[in-house]
Every structure is written in structure tokens, then in C-alpha cells.
Image 1 (cartoon, rainbow, N blue to C red):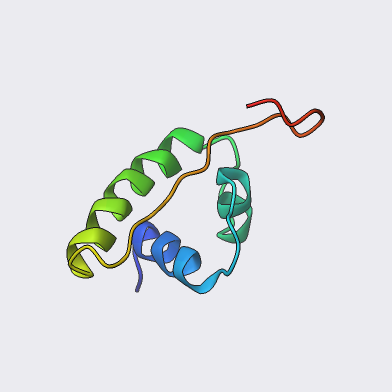
Image 2 (image 1 turned 135 degrees about the horizontal axis):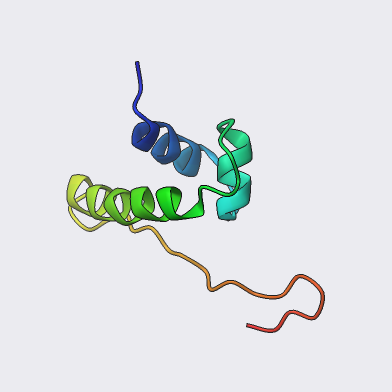
Length: 72
């Protein structure tokens, strides 16, 4: 049985485009309001990916932006 962190990691690796926290939550059947929990997992996943790949893979986080006007 996969942990939530493992599920998020697998989703990120298998997806070919950037995902928002809301998209990650919805893809895994989580409440989109649990953003803090997902961000906490993402911090650990970033460290794990870098360590396991010996620096060949990194997790990039794009800054949030307004959906209406694109303001960052």
C-alpha cells in the first residue's frame, strides 16, 4: 500500500505537465483545501527525488499566478 507521499511522487513523475496543488489533490481524491499538507509532502518529495537520483532529477515549483490576468 502506497503512502500519500509515494502517491504524490508517482503522480508527479508520470505526469508530463506541471500540476497545481489543487490538481494534485483532486487527482488523489483529497480535499483541495488541504494545501498545507500537500506542500509539506512536496518539500520532502523534492529532497527524496534529488537524493535518490543523485542530483539528476529535481522537483521544480512554479510560482502561483492569477488565473485571470497572469499576475505573479
